Length: 201
Image (cartoon, rainbow, N blue to C red):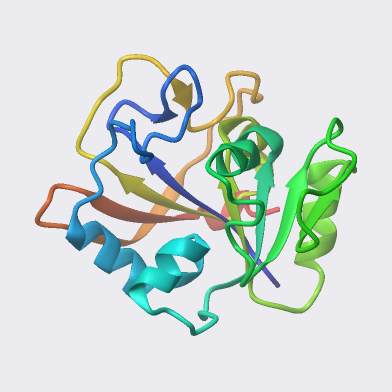
């Protein structure tokens, strides 16, 4: 069965972006992106790199982990503001929105249906795992459907911002099993957690 995997960059205090939701790795961003961080992504999670980065790094292989990416409207619009109508043309790209009615790119599918029902149907289909890119609001809606967390923990704190899961997510304590970890010289950690078997839906 396919799994839903939330691959997300987080600060030590649990934020994925600043209060304004702007791209924290953009030209005016505050998130450090050292060479060893990019190298690790390219080696282990090449599907999660946006198209311009893949071109710059000479990555052409489709990757082995994911064939589909999911994101919410606000997360998608971060790319739009940077001039990217489809940051992930190498994947099936779904954007959940009830306000966008016309896709800005033929490779981007707009989905107005319930995200939970959509993900449950996708899990029953054949294919590679499904990557949840975010943002926090969609992750909060899909909280109970997430099978694996890959937290790219940055060596910084914000004090305030957009949390890993939306503040509207249901209170539902869960335990996770650490299945892999990588510590980079630059200070970033890649932490992989699998949902405890007793909590698998």
